[in-house]
Image 1 (cartoon, rainbow, N blue to C red):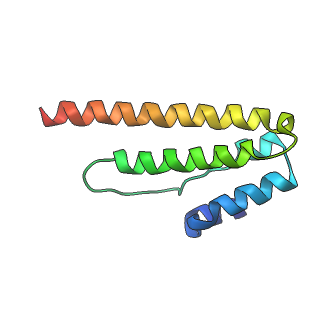
Image 2: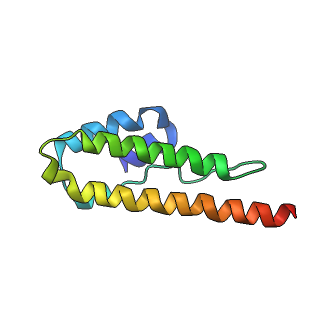
Length: 104
């Protein structure tokens, strides 16, 4: 719950909090319950910049995880974030196709 408040109000500090949390615990269940993005968003024009920003956030979080020791304690975290990264890349591809079809 506190993490959601950080994401929704203090998003520029998300990396510090992820790093701190992972330093305190390597519990994958806690990590998997984190939401790294605000509960709502709005945009005008293309949705791709929003998805790209979220992808960039996930990639930075992956870097933070990869720096943790012992690495074996964070293997599931990397697998989890990799899945989120793939999903975000697929979102970008999907929206590109939708926008291309709409512009024809």
